[in-house]
Image (cartoon, rainbow, N blue to C red; front, side, top):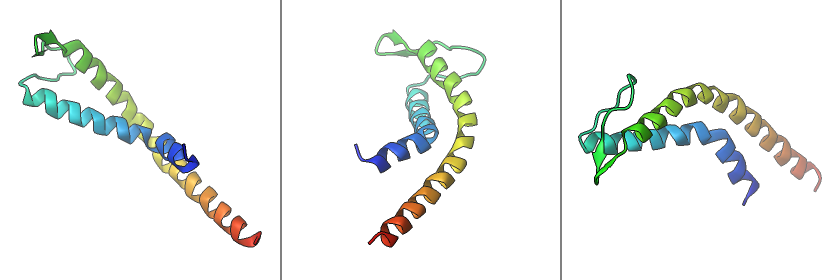
Length: 93
């Protein structure tokens, strides 16, 4: 994999999880299920109760919100490193 792709995934992983969480919430809500912080609610889809799995996903999602604080410092460091590497490449010619 490209180095920049790996760095981008490391920097933006909390945002990726939040986006996936929103997509799952839209799907589950569209199927008539409820999502509650009070605990797992019954959610039958194709004969399977996915309520506990959805509740676990959203419990992790609440914790990921705190990880969003890493995006700004990591993005800043990444931009600074890329600028330094660009200038270094230009100066070594």
